[in-house]
Length: 462
Image (cartoon, rainbow, N blue to C red; front, side):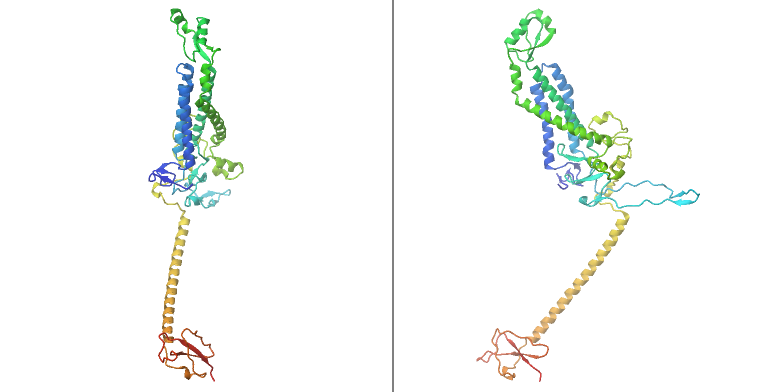
């Protein structure tokens, strides 16, 4: 899919888009599905699995599940809308710092010149209008842009995964895994406790009465006597052996069964993805870079630029910190952002492709050659047009001279009278004979024809 934008370039992946948003149809559908699954789980657990009378279930739901749900949705939104590291149009290579002295002392005390490093042409992406391509950037065919530290395009977050949103992607799958596990745990608690009833320990008759009346789960048997009120502090759960009315409602709840299947599926899926991302967290490289490094390609330019901090989560230290677990924008130490992305960018050069000085000189030579070729071509075309015009004029004048009729009649020819009819073909004489073109008259009328017909009589020289 090529670069695109919408809403007057307000959103999109084009170079002139103000806000990053991948408009891939498959990605938009999948990211909508990701939001829907989390909202569905929140609704079903809160209305079907959690009872207001269950203190333990409510503590887990509101104290653990809801915060993790909020973090998961927040991470998903940030991974979806954050620029993953698209190389802007007009990016230029970083200026390397070199020694101020270009000479050095040799072993014998003489001054020896330091050889200049061999230069090579900068990398360019022909799919991005020959824009500069940093060493750790790779082109993403879905967004149509070169992405720094490109890992892959994830349809579940609707965006390419790169240097600036890799953190949000990892947090999203991590928090989704946690919410899936908690969903299964709360469903399990509901299935285990569905056949139990909360009762007091004052007598077995109370429990029997509760069982005979088929009291549903979490309903409390009240007693008017003051003794039972005093003993109500000693509460326990007793299984309803005579009736499973509470479990029947749980087993026949289709929404709860669907949530169970979705939770198992997402738990397995996110577990595999999180295990794969552990290597990316440790190596600070994208998937394509890791694959190239494993087969011995790419050299050191694909490796991490420093070990002073983690490039995926940012910060000033490579150690785990609180900001690793919060979906906040990635912050690098001062002056290290350009080192991580591998390019420099000037707002004044927006929209213009960077070119090396020698490339600009070559372009000037090419432009002059092209202008010279265009001038030569134009001159030739004008000469050809003038020649064609002169030839056409000469042909017209010659035709007029030939087409003039004469008063010579056919009796003056050696072979006797010759009268031609209108429409007879005209023969052309060869270079060894003389051709006479004669105007003829209509037979029997003595009048000249309206359109004179010319015949060719070839006579040989004696």
